[in-house]
Length: 622
Image (cartoon, rainbow, N blue to C red; front, side, top):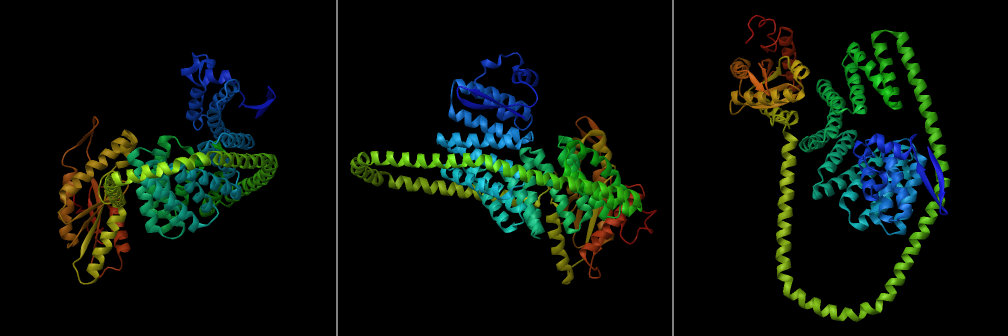
């Protein structure tokens, strides 16, 4: 809500969120509770607005109001633009789009009056974001293109990359995949040059999503894995959760439901751990779809019901609607037609409610459009006035510049002759240095694309490439090979009882022990979660069994002592061979998986050879 006060003939808007300014400062910020707010400088208050605009926007609004009061007494246009920009952001998060747009327009006008280009870029970006959340894509694109132009004028590479990324999101949302791809790629190039790791995470993840939609799932996987590696390296847990969920969705797209399930469960656990409820709901909803597609409606139901409660608490209408549609599908699969009908009714009611809200938003946008037209015209007049003023100054200065031009030219000519050689050598050194850095970055990205970031083993994609290569050789007359899928026993209990950090250490130690027990020509990869895959070339299941037995002995050789926790570890293995009689690699992997699950049903800590499950029931290798 907002109230209007008049001071000294100037209209000042004070934005509130149900509480007074001073009371908010005392309650919300313990470090300021003992400090007289009037003693805080405007710069300190601006820092506080910036710090809290995302985590506690109501508190940010309180700081902004106090800063604006002080700025009435001691004007500082640059600081005022900064405060208004952060206030616009906070008001949007509080669900006050009209107030946010008015503050954004006021900030933009003030920035233009004072030729504050960075402030202009930020204001244009913020106004665009408000329109984005209101669903007005055309207006969003207009403001973000303007923001891009301003940021290009001042040479702000991070700002340019951010604008390109945002513009790509608009095109993606509008279904223009090719344009979205171009914007994300341009943003990626700039952030690679600047080394902005946070931005790289977002650009690569967005590239993965648009490529997945375009059907290039292989490259989408590479993009997501690069993003995941960087996010884990810089500790961006929220970005990591989003990427893992996107990977789960990608594998669901390609039909690998088992791997999709693993990634989505990991994404759900991570989102729960860091307290991002919206990502928990997203991961759970996609997991429910995968379970339903896998023919497990009962298990899907146990996840859908509590997830709906979380979505209700977040008032996420779209997520609520989608969950009710999934519930309806689940109940149909379970044969409970009455509950299926009830869930579908809930889906329909929320859908109608969302359509009404979209209509109201459009009416609001029309109203805002009328209110902001005057501001737009004023901004255009200010821009014209600024241009005319610059032209007059240029003319007044022209004669003086002409006089000095000849002198400057002679001095410059002598300087060029004197330092030309040194400048050229310095430029060459800079170019070589930048080229070396770029090549190092490219090598690191290539390494991340094939490496599991936790265990440093091959990842699933790299292993699949090796498997396909060997299969081709076998088809052309080469030797057979064996795939051994190894799953750590009772690993979930380790995570549940001791936490994911201990679980991660178990995976790292297990990877080291497996790698140390295989032959030099054997290849080990993390296949997903607590599963590892050993590729054993030029072998059959009989010879491979001795290698796998050595691996199991290495795993169980001595207990692991991890942060004061002593754990013994074992594994269950399913094996299958690929030879000239095999129908496909996919079938061999399925056979190994089935053998693995058969071993799990026997109690684990054994090796089962595909096709010999019954024969080996009492001859498992322990």
